Length: 365
Image (cartoon, rainbow, N blue to C red; front, side, top):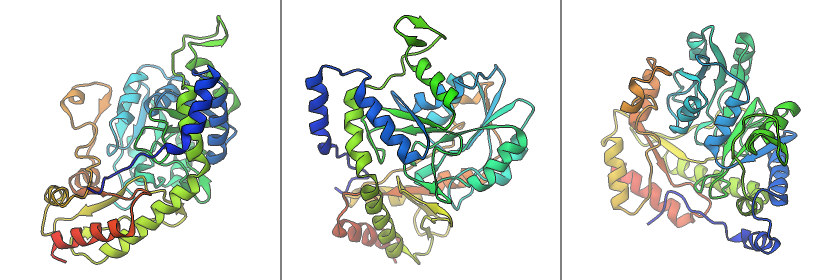
């Protein structure tokens, strides 16, 4: 089986042992070391480690002190954590359609969703390619919105040379399948000194120092054990990303010209980090997306449908007054056609050839 993803944290063993032997296994010096390294990657002065990527989103919204009824505009084509975080923070979610070219929120569709209650614009840098921040930043400024970047899948990605997580408040996931993992974990990045300070107090039960409470806080802390897993990966992030890029290039070259199949595009000015390699199976293809997924699985090739439905298209959200659905035809079509193929750094040349030949075989190409 060629898996859709591979988790490899063996390089972390020395640091994990160092933490175990130190006796400091909760949030301590290893977390600080990890934060400093992550801030450097994101090109900002502050990285605040938390216990998962959803927490990063929740805490970022909470730190903005939104009031009930205040709204966040985001994409409907994303992992459900994006929506869940908005709801957990007490905000209301609105949705703008996406572009099928980069799978990200379409700047042209954002303004129509802005109301007098809109406070936050939350683009999601899906699959490892950043949204069109060159157009989204001016839109946010025009409407007085704070940008919260859902960068869960985009560590190391850039737009015009500027890293993900540096355009506003950046929120990253360190879940097991991400390009950088601590098993569970998340990071918030910011250039705002006061915001970073507030987040650090908030994540530790609202304590500035022991039993010195300044706000109603939470236990959002990351452990030193988790941080120890991530540090060696951050140190070789460029190497891991380069491998993903080589693999993506090989897949696109091998699948180019297959009728009914659209390979993912890397748009000008953007550096893609290929968390996922996602093709579109068009209406003119000889098979449906689901049929292709099933046939690849039969051939021993892992694949994933990310994501089969729009986030608001589930019963648990339909009657929620904090979820304001909208007409998003592009996102709906993409959700019916998108399929992700393996692109992780552990793929061999033979694996890549097998993936390409298998897809072409199913398409009769």
